[in-house]
Image 1: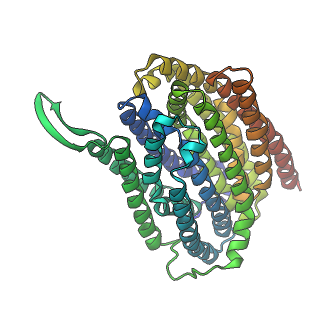
Image 2: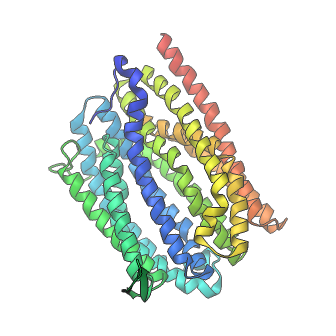
Image 3: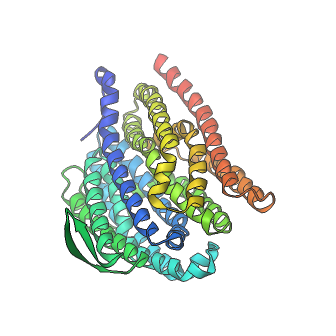
Length: 463
């Protein structure tokens, strides 16, 4: 479906935004729910298991975000092609997505599997859980090709305006993960259901069972979304050229490369950040891991709106309709502020109860509650740069976000955390304070950039 909006229909911008954003929000909500369940199930095995799983989470972000950058390039090319009324170019880009999936998926599978033994060492994971953390990482990343497929093909579908299909596939993936967790993590046990004792058979694999469940669900997701894309009536790559086509790939890489550098550098920053926190000990690592999991649910409105902003701004940019871009920005940014303020308020209130879901350790709960309430106050400010970055991705303007994110991550978060934890010995609270400062810097930089962009759009409209 083409979500282009004519001048007569601009008054209906909000329904269009929600049509695109809501399925993405639901998809992310389901993913977060599964992440909550995963963390709770692993948490029931003890703090040691939670730390072993969480210690390499930021490496997962590093790999996943680098692959997602390729999706950003495809999103801009496809959404702009659709906005310009060039559906054949959009389908050619879908064909090139298949090529990118194969190259990136195979490369990252070999890369991550070969390094699974040393990554926990690089991450300064406690010596007594390094082996366990390494095995978990190896199992998860043996299916990297299928994860790459889900990321890139899901972005192709969203760029065409189809956000419901990735939501449905993601829901099925999450359900499979939960069911397999139930049977693979725990040993055979007897449970009481409505007064009846039922024997539930289990493999008793612990966190390795959690990894196997995730790996199996990734395989299902990759295969399913490939089949759906292949049969899609608007954006199917069937019959398209799969050998490299520079007419499509050149603008895709031009857009994706700064975004890839940004995601790689910021994700590498997350790795450095987590490594410094891991060095603070098991309690800090567990509290940080759980708090990150809890907080992820409260970013959902932001990233849902980012998807809508990217697709709609790409459509408008492809049409050459600056008036529509101005209208989009005036609609979506205030909406984002309201949603994220509500989300931050909920996080502040519910922080202790949410921490108790994942841990029964009083120190972990207390520390996690403190940092969550700190970050809850900054949620609305973080939502603004998320949406503005989405608009810029759709327009193919990824250079400025690259600079802003690098400055925020390395000059504020990493440098600040290093000083606070290594020289002042202030612990996890100081690290999260530096994270909040990073978010505030992004708010200032992106707001200034948006104000300048908005003036240009208004000038163009008056002309």
